[in-house]
Structures are given as structure tokens and as C-alpha cells.
Length: 285
Length: 261
Image (cartoon, rainbow over all chains, first blue to last red; front, side):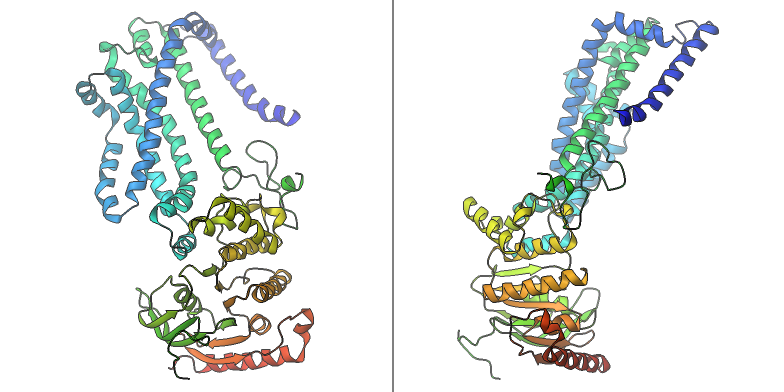
């Protein structure tokens, strides 16, 4: 409890101070709320406009989640395909790179013309930006499998499929999860950017649409409230994906295991090795 | 010795004839290596670093095909080989039990059989209490034990070890030496292990093949006839010291004229 307090207190204090300073400046300099509302005004807007903003948040999050899920599945699948043969990698990878380096704002209008269903078009945009980190990271992971382990598989005459299942996929898991963490944020950005491009033309009513709408009607506090929600959603998404990564890797991967003498990332100290080579955690069982 | 035709009991389990191994980068690891591995022996391949000992072992395992020469293997099936690498080379994401069970899974054994055999193996290497541990939670010596348990899980006829104890401390190494001798006796294994330690080869082997520096050839062979339950006392015995001296002399000779074939 004490440690938690020591951990959480400084950042919390900084946040409170910054917000207080912001409020003070807005009040003392009489800055009109259509230029810069204070934190209290934004909080009020958040409360008042919750019935409008919350459904919009859900919509944006739905598009983000769908895009991220598709990126995870298809990205990993493409990575598996890429590492099957050098010629496949050489012929397909450039397409992935081209898709990645072309700015989304430039492709989004085309996609919105081509795809009738606006929701699908938005999801597609978000998917396009979220796809690459998963695919390229996973491909790297699949190729990073220990060569001796691959030799061992050959010794027992293991098929390509068994090598993939027992060696390559588990080796790639930390890389895949790392890519997914990047893709999470990108999918959210993609969903928002696509909706901004779609503008008021469609039936879309995600958070980006609320921001545009608030801009047109000079409802600046509501605009800020929507921004706050977007920021919070991004942070939560990142935290959730980090949590998934930690849970999947905590028993074996260096990135998730605490060391003796240093504080583990989360949870209780583990992986403390004694002379017999058993961890204290195990001997406790 | 003329090559004996037909499956007589004297047929070596592995026979290398005039084996040359050249890698793509031009390195010649072996040049004209002749070596027989007899059923039931404990053969040490001793030589300086980079003399192609590991290459010879990989040829015996069937992981490499020789550039020239022949490698014959007389095994009941091609998978009856266990291989222990220099590093433990375990699956870090799998428990000790799952690591040992891997070869059995690959060979497609039924699940209860896999579980039974893995447990048996863990027990025989003193790993019984560690089945649910992960490799990173174990010490170096324990990890190497898991690696040996995995190599033996599918009950191989031939066990190949590539400097398995080089990275371990001496106390652990000695203990594992004795365990390896015990397993060799109790399982009726044929063992080939690579080492650069004169003392280890003299303690463990029933026969020592000394290799020249790169490209490797056999510089000489020394039979070790000390009786096999070799306890700690053996390390101080006259017979052991005599073997060490003989092996050292042969190794010095091999290094002296190793460059010229």
C-alpha cells in the first residue's frame, strides 16, 4: 500500500498541478471558452454531453477493435506466409511497405468512394494502418527461432507444420505482441482520421464526427470532452494490450519477468533463483 | 580391418569414410576423416577448438551431408539418435515436462504414453520435482540435465553430445559426468561426445579419438580400459593419470603437425 502510494503520488500530483494551473490561467486571463475552456468546464461538458458522447465513443471503439482484430489475424497470417519462402517475401513484402508508407488521409477518400458501407470503409482504413506492425514484427519473430531448436526438429523428422507450431509460432509470440501494442494505438488513430475524412457526409457518428460537429457549432468544451475521451481510450487500449502481453509472457520471456534486485513491472517479485535452481515462488508450492 | 559385409554384430553403428566437409564460405572443417563408432562404446572426440569436432557430430546425426566421402548409419530407425547441444537449447515457453516430452510428441506417440515416458525420464535424471518449472527458473546444470533428459526421451540407441558441459562449473560438470556414465551403463547406449578437455575425455570415454587442427582428421586413437563404475576415486588413480598423460601427448603431437596432411 505504501509502495503503491509512493508510486502513484508523484504523477497524480503533477496532473493535479497542471490542471490547476490551466484553470487558473483561463480564469485570471478571462480566456473565452470558445478558445480554451478550463478543465472544470470540460468536465461539465463531459457530464452534460455524456448521452451524445458515450455512444460515439462506443462506435469509434468498435471500429478500432474490429480493425485491430483483423490486423492481428491477417497480419500474423501474412507473416506466416512471408517466411515460407524467400521469393514469397520478396514479392509480397513491398506491397505491405507501400501500403504502410502511403498516408492514410490520401487513401481514405478513395476507400470511402469504393466501399459503400461507411462503417466497413472506416474499419478498412484503420485496418490498413494497424496491419503493418503486426505483420512485420511477427515475420521477424518467426525468423528468429533458435537454429539449434530447428535442427532438433529436423532430427526427429518434424514436418513444416510441426516446426511452425512447436518452435516458430511460440518464438514469434513476444514480437507479435509487441507489434500488437503499436497497432492498437494506430488502429484508433486510423479510425479517427478516416472518420474525419468521411466528414459529415456519411451516417457515421463516432468521436471524430462529434469533434467536427462541435467545431462547426463552436461547442469547444464538447470538442475537448471528446478529445479527453479519445485520449483515455488510447491509454486504456495500450494498457490492455500491455496486460495481455504480460500475462502471455510472464513465465518465460525476459521482457515480462522481474529480476532479483529490481522491481518487477507488475505484481509480486518472481523468478528469484536460489542455489538449487528453483525459484522461491516454486518452492513455496 | 576389412569392412565386414552384412548385418553382423561387429558392424559399427556409425561409419565415416574419407569424409570431407567444406562450408559455403570456403572453410574446410574436415578432410579425409575415417572413424567408426562401435555399438555400446563411449567415444570421445577430442581436439582443439575449430577442428571440426562438432561438424563430425552433426554428420553422424544426419543434420549435415558430407561434401565428399560417406557416412553410414546402422540404426533401427533414423530418429533413434539423441542430440545434446552445447547450450541447453530448451523451449523457454514450455515447462520442463513439456520440453522433455517434445521428441515424443514429434514422433506421434499417444498422449498417456508421452506423459508416462516423460515422467520416467525426469525421474531418472533427478528432475522429478521440477516438472512444472520453466527453464529460466533453473540453474545451468539443471537446464543441461533437462536437455539430456529430452535427448533420451525417445530411447535413442545413439546419443551425441556436443561439448555439453563446457559452460558449467567444475563441481556440476563432475556430477554430470558421473550421471552420464550411469546412464550409459544402465541404458546400453552408444555415446559420442565432443570435448576439448583432456581430463573429461580420460574420465568418461572407453575410447578417445584425437583430431588434428582444422581441417580435422584423426591423429590417433586411445583405448581407455579402466573399469566403468568410475567413482570420484578414479580421478586420483594411476590408471586415470596415465590416460591423461597419453592423451595429452597425442594431442600435442596432433597440434605439432596438424597443419600438414
